[in-house]
Image 1 (tube, helix red, strand yellow):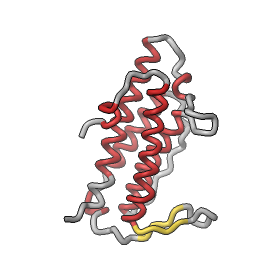
Image 2 (image 1 turned 60 degrees about the horizontal axis):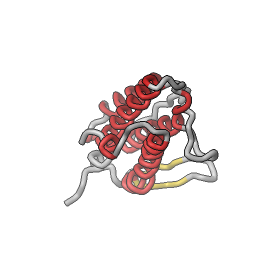
Image 3 (image 1 turned 45 degrees about the vertical axis):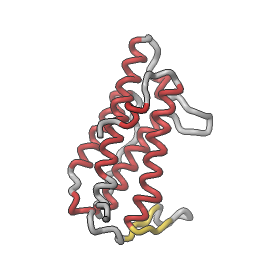
Image 4 (image 1 turned 90 degrees about the horizontal axis):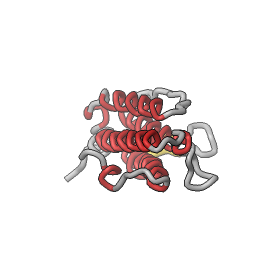
Length: 169
């Protein structure tokens, strides 16, 4: 039995972005309830050389958009990634979810052999088939940033657990 490239991508991104949105809501509510500045969470890092929570969320949304559009043969819309608040991150996630909802399975399924090149014209240029791009690059990158965002919040005392991470499935 084969699995649909669409089923392995867009719905997975939608689920995990939904869970990311929900844990950000919990983080904001907890910051407000405990009277501490949202920036304490938004700028938190697991280690000094890692990106802060804000950037982890932005990159997760970027990967969800970029991978889905590339799989569908669409131009990847460029977002500014200048969010500075929980509300702005929620707006970013909402815009990303709207884009994902506009991509249909017929645009992706059957395109497993499509050639996808990342970082074209740079020393980091890589060529993939669409299937390899999704499975060995896109999904691992996306999950790294979603997981890191979750870990940052959990590490900082936000009351989230595995069910929150998994979202609605």
